[in-house]
Image (cartoon, helix red, strand yellow):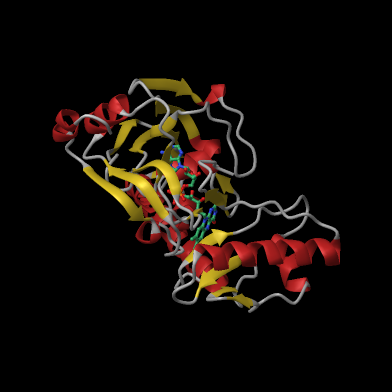
Amino acid sequence: VTEPCLLDSLKGKLLHHHSMEKFTSWRAGGAANSLYIPKDYDDLKFFIKQLPPNESLCFMGLGSNSLVLEGGFDGTIVITQGALMGLEKTSALTVTAGAGVSCAQLARFSAREGLTGLEFLAGIPGTVGGALTMNAGCYGGETWDRVASVELIDRSGAIIARSAKEFSPTYRHVDVPDNHFFVRGVFTCELGDSAHSLKTIKSLLAKRNAQQPTNWPTGGSVFRNPPNDYSARLIESCGLKGYKIGNASVSEKHANFIINEGGATAGDIIALIDHVSQCVYDKTGTRLEREVRIIGEYNDLV
Ligand SMILES: Cc1cc2nc3c(=O)[nH]c(=O)nc-3n(C[C@H](O)[C@H](O)[C@H](O)COP(=O)(O)OP(=O)(O)OC[C@H]3O[C@@H](n4cnc5c(N)ncnc54)[C@H](O)[C@@H]3O)c2cc1C
């Protein structure tokens, strides 16, 4: 942000050299050069428009799949969680949600409206923007199976509407043009039964609690599952459950989760990710691919 008069017009919160620890579910990580929490959509447009074009820009939701390296992010991170809101039934079978709405809110809202198809999202601890970016999924459901259309914001602050047909989502991935960020999603459901959908949500959450270390700070599944196999199975087969570097350890409950036992640094977590990946490769010949997004000092998103 260059001109003080422009700064005065911002309605959101602008922070400098701010640790991302509180903005990621790992509760670890370096600082963002600038961090912006917009007040609303108009404020976001205004903020983006006045950013220098060469400023690196990244969006984050609940930070449940992200780790900022200790060297920090030399650019601006926009936090959508709690900012880009709005959740409504926009036709008989569609629900429109802002990028900052949580997946749980979207799932419950749709269920209460008597719509079915989004129950699987209830236990994914992220935002709509994060779910669209990651094509988040579980228990047989994937985000993009349900997307009718999206809206993105570009670096000029313009909002661009796109049909789902213009995207080719794959497992935990969708290609998005550079410097475009999700601000809304429209989801298609089927007519369902509210009580039944809410019951489904309850049982999916119970299943998740039984399988995952949900009471620890984690970044979710660290590695994507290789074709026809499970990363957790491979990691466990290498005897890595409980393996620790610094204050980060491989979860005893689910081997594809790394937990922060308290005070773990991004460095501890990265070292453990590398160690696990190397061990699995050495012992099984499988190269695990990282699912977690590393946001790094060289302004790169991996
Ligand atoms: C306990 C636990 C369980 C999990 N279980 C699952 C699971 O079952 N299935 C699953 O798929 N995932 C799971 N995850 C991972 C994670 O919750 C999902 O990937 C989720 O979709 C991430 O959402 P987020 O808002 O937290 O994204 P963030 O971590 O904030 O961001 C993820 C990526 O999306 C980008 N991004 C975020 N918002 C936007 C936006 N508006 N526009 C453009 N880019 C954006 C970020 O730059 C980053 O690259 C789990 C995580 C945890 C901690």
